[in-house]
Length: 387
Image (cartoon, rainbow, N blue to C red; front, side, top):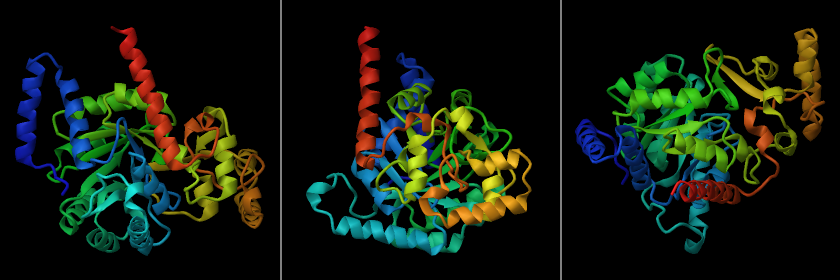
């Protein structure tokens, strides 16, 4: 069974960290090592460095999440279009496991809970159905994001999800130092923080986001004594990004956009090919509410805005075309299938600034192993050249 972080454990861990610091390891390094050891203990099938598949709404389905976990990562299922989709997706994971040969699964996969996590988008989520899905299927982790009522709402979800399955690890996605402090000081502290930099695709901080290189270490310094895992998200698409995240003190690295180009992603072919085609993320992606408005996706808390690949809808908007005409052209593009995406397309293509690092579509397991291999090779080279 997975363990939760309690106050007694926190005190013991803090004493251990101080002892390690006195023996020559800095407090920060000790905290990082302890965090990675706890992660490996809670998720024993994972391999190093830890690769996390982000819970992208709809597109991170059961096949993608499970294949990431089978390859030694930790895959998350994203929120569905309807509340009941979460339970259905978790049931699909259970069925996939049941139909798999034992030889095809890691020997360390758990038997009493699922080796995948699940993401919940709080502002429009249904807590009752989320709790029931967790109680019935027992995913190993729950990733909470985008509350309307801030820390108060995060705590409500945390308490009820933990009551539904006490062994679950609760992760909270944040994008500011203030959010990290609130989470760390909470009586219902999460097991992990996912620190999302401004480079990330999908919905992130609208006006107060910061690049991961500056944001992550400041948050790490603020929370290092609170026994939480901290994961880096945003702009990571290959082994180089993973090594950078580890150097900042991350427990592991989260990839979202890279897994849009996985064969198991629940994504339209035109969307996926545009992720592969796009280059120069600083120019070809932007944060804008335009595509939410065109899609009729309203209600997001005002502090969030999505990053996506710009296309003809955005260019026309910049040129002053009125919204009614943009909406008409957008809705016509929906009827064109995969042609609705691309530079001349008009459909939303939410993706991160690292799109220029993605050049092919691969199986999720291949992506995990390739990225880990790249990262380990870089770190081994560092070790050789510093001896």
